[in-house]
Image (cartoon, rainbow, N blue to C red; front, side, top):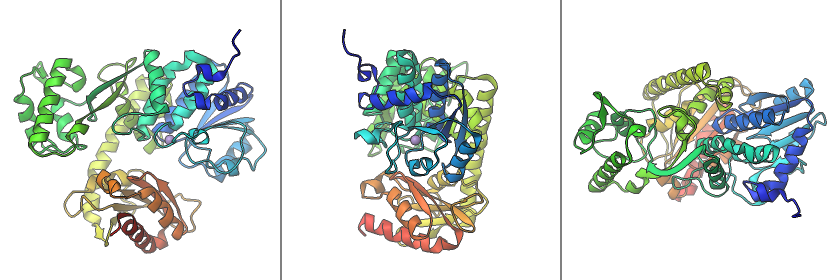
Length: 477
Ligand SMILES: [Mn+2]
């Protein structure tokens, strides 16, 4: 008889033993709390955790935090749980978590761990995998779910893919490393389809002219931002793109019709000198068990819907959807997303009204309390290239942050956005946010192309100066 090794049936063999240990602690829990980050990766993590626990017959509650700070941990201690499963956060806070001896912490996360030994800790960084591109929080949680329930939990890989896509873990348009292995399990389980397709947001739900006109990742002259241009382009194609007078969605096209549109788009892009035309095609992750024509069918649209629930602090709605509820929960999420899009549309006007200041190497604006701190970063990204806002200069956006217990006095939420070409030249906003925030008594981090921080409001000018210096050093100007 072959000796049983957990790695034999593990989506990510390097994490098999860690996942097994976590699963053991969870099975023994008597009063279990799942605590998760409130964003698309965190919501899918919580969904995976909750479904896996339910299937394993382990009763549990769920809770969400924007940030896992000391007061949140103290809340869990006071509630008297014997085990707390932290998903999509927890690794970096293990020093604080382990100060309290009240509960057993189980962590499945992909962020930089604190320098503390923990018995139940599933994190790709501990095994030499990249936590930014090879496995998300939902992926790490999926590993534990697989250890809990075996191959029967492979259907949860679809949620893990939504989490990874929502966490911006794609590299060159596709998931790589352990994320790709997780996706493969979803394909094997029959819940996921991975294909090369038009890499544009909204293929399930947007009519074709809107799909093309709103797609801004690749700017095609005469189509991007130009609904009439997009209409003319589509009308000129030799394909039946309408049905009963209505434009079809991308999802409703046949393979042949899709090929016709893609090749005409690529030709137009090449003819008009678009440099990144090849990025028009990318890898698409389709959740095949979901209804065609709904946002949930596409990993990218699914994650956008979840982010809308997170931004407006309706994690209950996001979690319900991840757990398979439809009906009212889905309606609520859709209406939050519509509301979100309206906020964004008015947001760009707010930027125009408050005005954008130009420093040597960055530009910035302060929206005060006129924009929710949860959307100011997206608005900043959208404003780049608009009237009076440079498209090729990093932008720093401030908004009032009423609830920031870690900052003395009034606080500001900071969001920064760059562009892929600035990143190619050396920009790393994650480093900028963390260094500049620390210099003024705040806290920051994020990604190369998008980062955030919380700082004392009184130090805004010092912060801008520190950001300007850092960016100058990175871009070597
Ligand atoms: Mn994450």
